[in-house]
Image: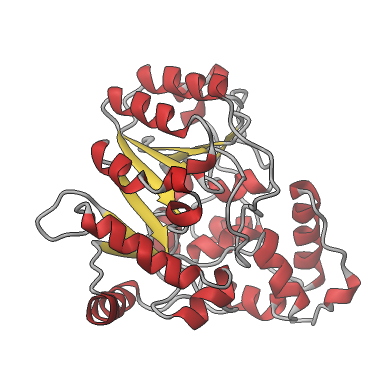
Length: 348
């Protein structure tokens, strides 16, 4: 594959410009298009299956600025879901039987209406996942009771922990993040999360710190369980290994470090039709902070709205959305390489 010089491309701030950049890079490197890969195995166009997950991005505000963040989240981001849009989400849930609501950000807890929204969703008897970055619990005294709030409403907590030591974690997520993450995990354990006799689920997320694919999810889970138990007396339920998708800050890292072409080559060579069958965009609808609808969280960050006349939560129509084709592009190689990757870990 041809080499791409980072200096020849200006990384744009907007999601639309990032998508345009990615297309140009793919052409420069003469990459096979993702749609062609799907077509070769009889999966194009990619179609949705029964809707199982209603994923809501509550805003891009976050107390961290992680190097790999595909949301480009941080303390300076002001995009945040309004209570009106949350009510539209609740109205949609009340008219459907979607079993799981997955709350993401940024740090979803930083939305001022987060607790109200959770309480209203639970009234609808839906399973709620909160994607907690752990350090938010310690960021401000007003968040210190989050473990109790999670427990009270029986939330499943899914938290990113890049590695079980400070060096690799802090390099990816910021100085001091590992120590604060350990403190937060202990607080969650103390209220019952992750304990063998508890129904309170605590799941961790691993993603590589460099330009490579994750190792075996089961192997990583065993390593994390052993080290966290032995060194920190921390327990958890499951671990999800997630491949870094080449968009936003991670795309920036790949290009500026000269790793983009090699990383894309790894993803393409590892394309797995079985993983493609299980990608999250087939059973998930992703709701942006402004209420627009996407096939997945990654498409949301690239402003690739669903290919349907129904494009906003206020006009949600499950039947119409079930007829759509999933919007795909070159970043989708990240979810279909090897054992696959989704918000719930491997797919194959």
